[in-house]
Amino acid sequence: MANALANDALLQQEIDQQVIQNPNLSFAQKKSLRKSILKASLANAPKNSSLQTILSVSNTMVGSSLLVIPVLFQQSGILSALIVALVFCLISCKTCQLQMVHNKPEELDLPQTIVRILGQKYNLIFNITNIIILYFAGVVYFILICNMLYSLVQLICRSLEMDYAPKTDFVLGKLSYQWCGIVYMCLLFLIMLQKNLTLIIKLVQYGVISIIALIIYIITNGSINMPEIVNANLFTLDVVTLCGVFSVAFMVHSCIVPIMKNNLQQQNNLRDIAISFGWTWLIYALVGVFGAIAIQGKAVNPSGDGSTVLDYLDQSIFSYGIQVLQLLQLTTVFPLLAFITRSQFFALIYKLEQPPQKWFVLYTSIVAFSTLLFQCLNISVSLILSLSGAVIGFFQIYLIPIQLHMTCLYAKKKVNDNRIGLINDSKEYIENPDESIFDEMDFKCIDHSTIKKRFNKQTRFIFYYIIMLIGAMMGFLNIIAPFFK
Image (tube, rainbow, N blue to C red; front, side, top):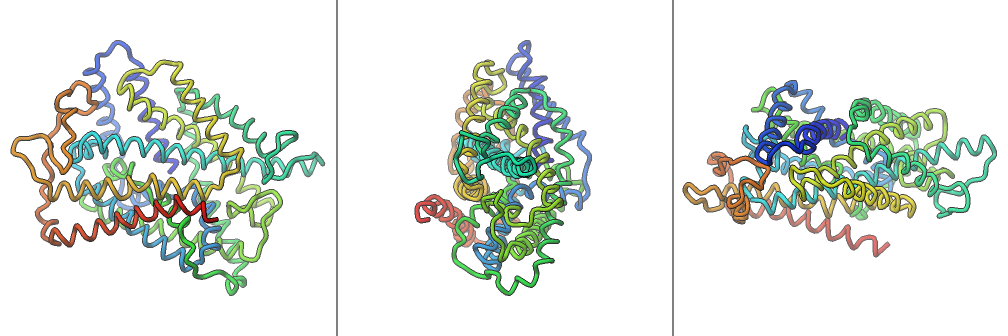
């Protein structure tokens, strides 16, 4: 995920500096310059082989969820977790492929495809859900940052014989988990206010080292504790939280188009997407199985609360080394998440205009304070991941890709009309072309006659709306599940 965020942030930073912050350009000139920057970024990006593309897609999916997946495997049962992971891997893979099927070569990103087929309302849904998903990703990252940091702080306090509060207690009268978050957020807030994050973007690219180290560390501990496999929990029906977590763990839909645009062999896009999802499932399976075995029969460390796999593993120089790497990686990614969500939020309101400085500071302050509130209240990382993945993720994983597909295949089209779809809400764009950041485009769909021949209309409707029903059920169950625990 980190590299994709770095690329997005670098591109958005260039657009901000050259387009949005330039008061001497008209809206039409800004739109033209923005398009030129996007095209140049795509043209200048090196073309990747299939292997590089597969690894890039997989690297975008693999992230902070690795820390919580082993705990969920152990709680929900190893076999149950493997099945759930496979189901959501296949669903996400298929809906990602649907997006690429309907993306035209000249369309630089997914929003252009959405506007062409479904109209502005669906594009608004996509943008809003994307902002919310990235916001909650930032919340999760900050909580994990504080988890790693407070574990290291407790190590220092024990060596200096200083008093401190347990992580699970809400305490403001002495050194505590809450004060750790408050102090660190003050430091991060100064970075969040910056509009130039070039140094951070460069550092993020080395985050893959911490991911590889974490995977090796978990697999090694699982191998050492392998005799405990006989006591491992294999199967339960308590998989609701797991479903939500794997929804977000396989969510790459918002950035799949730019990644695949750089694939040297465009005809292999669908195949490479399938392989990348299969490879990612294998990574999650290895980390989940070996991680569940590694923590089997072990109690939570005094410095943790049981939310991540590191809370169970023996505290040693290797464990603290992994925590330092994770702390550094998460610290560099968090400001990028804040930067991208802020840019996308103001783009919805001001389009290509510069927002007033007071709103810039106010928005950043609200994000920082609300994120800190989640951390101080010690909200479960798994709960945040599952709710954001199952509820908000429903729109990006299920609704938009399937609606794109069914609309493009079966909606009635009007000759020489630049509106298409079951929901013709492109009217605002047509009547006010100067207010849209998109250029005029051909609203005709790609020829899908070959695809339409594979299944009849009824079969295809049943198949995809069963998938959408699964997504809706998972969202509903994740909403009500916390009230029954």
